[in-house]
Image (tube, rainbow, N blue to C red; front, side, top):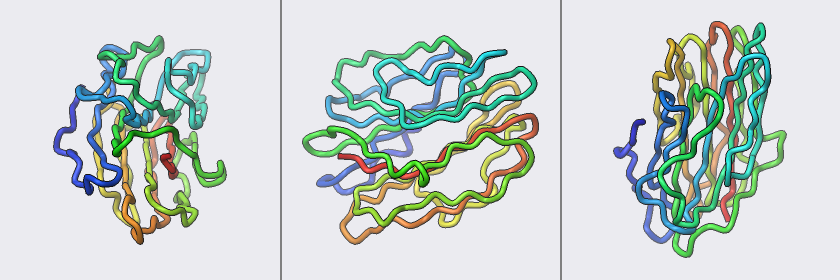
Length: 222
C-alpha cells in the first residue's frame, strides 16, 4: 500500500480540497482507507478486479457504484469500475474484497460542512472501456459545469504501460506497478474556484498487451 502523502491538499481552505490518495493493497486483495477520514469526506474509488471464468462483482460494501466495464479475454474476466462513499468517520482501516485486486486507488476530498453526494455527468460523458490493441484517443467531456468539479481517469494494462498523451495535463498524476508485470495509472484534476472552468481532457491509451481497461469522466460533488 502506498500512501501518496505528497499529494497533500493545496486548494483554498474555503472550498473543496484534495486531501490525498491511497493505492489498493494488491498483495492482500483489499483497499485501505485513508488514515484521517472525517465524517462528510468524499471517498472516490477507481479499481480493476480479476476473476477467472466469471465477471467479478462491482459492488464494494458501503460504496455507491458510478459505473463499470467488463473486460473479457480468453476465459479471464476483469472488471473496471468507479464508486464513491460519503464517509461517516467510522470506516475502520480496510475493505477486504473477495476477488483479486489488480489495481486501484481511493481519492479523498473534503469541504467545510462535508459532502452530501455526487452527481455523475451524463453517461455519454463518462467513459468505461475494455480494449485490446491501441485504441483511438478518448475525450472526457467537461459539460461546462460550474465548479467544484472533479476530473478523473484510471487505466490498467497487462503490459504495465501508462497514458501516452494527456491534453491538458492533469493536476495530480501517478503511475504504479500493479503486480505480475501489470501496471496502472491514475489522474485527477480538481476545479474548485469560481471562474476556474473545467476543460475537456484528451487522453491516448497505449497498447495494453493481453487486455486493458480505461475509465474517465467528471463528477460534480454536492
